[in-house]
Length: 249
Ligand code: ADP
Image 1 (cartoon, helix red, strand yellow):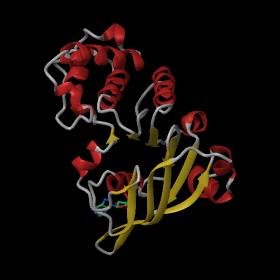
Image 2: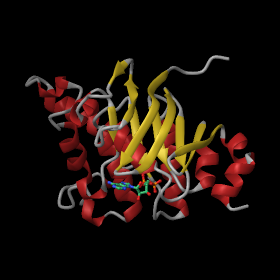
Image 3: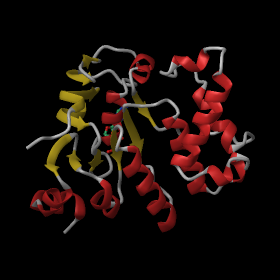
């Protein structure tokens, strides 16, 4: 069958801290237009995998390829400019700026891929247009003039996704995007992610298995730094090893 192309892959990815292997020989293929979940119990190595892929940590062994380029030895800022972007932490939202200005600032970040925003002519119009598009894409248009500080927790995280999308990632890494959210915000962020993934790859760490079942095309289950199972959610959730190790049934 015809699977979408792989945009981010890891082979034999390994990270050793002292004598402890936090990530062991992990192979990963993240595909365009798919939502890929990374799940597993606490301490499984999910955060370390994210840190390796974004190059915040240097792998002890293995290789990483982004959009056809080997990035095993590439610096994190370069990797971000190449299109692999991790969601900002909430602290990256400027509380005293409006929602719209937060997105405008994000669009003007110096490592932004679309350098045309730096051209003097028509740049302001294009910037404002693009900011409005992004707000509309995440459903924040009506709150454009609100101060970020006045948004609810869930809406702040949606703003954080908008500022991340401002960097026009080809591969978007989301670390527990629904953590701490109520059901309504979870539904809202789920549809944003589904929509956003139509034009890029999304890799997300997610604990909420109904979200994984709902929006993820592919699931990789980590346990003690190793891949325990992978496949679509239906397959993975039936796997007796996964049920024992992760779901506790
Ligand atoms: P998860 O995100 O799945 O909860 P982590 O990637 O945070 O797991 O951690 C995996 C394992 O690696 C844990 O046992 C953790 O204690 C260990 N670990 C993570 N970072 C470091 C570090 N900098 N030094 C030593 N051990 C670490």
